[in-house]
Image (spheres, rainbow, N blue to C red):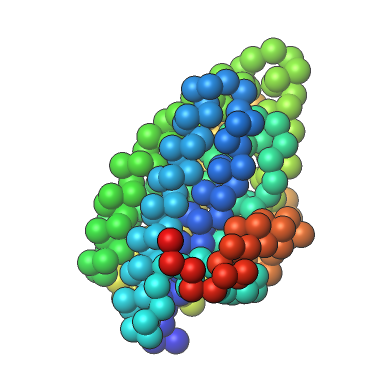
Length: 252
């Protein structure tokens, strides 16, 4: 794989992660526990959607075949998406949503911080803009995790279950492949080993503050980098792509 192909795949992965999480957060509109969280989730979804658009646009420029953001978002099949399995997991209660966001954001923030200094000007510019948004997301969601974990016995139990149930999807965030290696070595991109060590340290401190137990070593689910997803992804992408699939090339 050459540098340009690796850069294209990397930009698409970033776009896929942002788009899938945006779609999941949009589902919470009118389903949040309070009005303030309704507003927060809607705004967070818009942030991720904006990031997805920028990453897809950059991917189109790198590819040079005329594909645009809508083509990548709506006209690719399920196996062409490489978003993390963690992000496609369905909503349960509010604690599940917070746990999913925190587990991802604690990875995504240092990834963006590294990309903001990388050798590809396009990715660096997008990451420098996105990191400001994710810092706010991370602060908001981590405060909720601590608040819920240190809450009543029932809330504490549900928050612990949320962390335990989602933990098996976190390993693939750090399971790099050839694309990650090329972006790291050729473009001075993120070092997943360093991010992994910092992530575990940060999560251990946060969970301790929330009076929650950090799950131990366990089998990790994976497959997103090769387009393999859980059973939840098909319905998600079908709903997301319905309009463009029904009316290809629709001009808004």
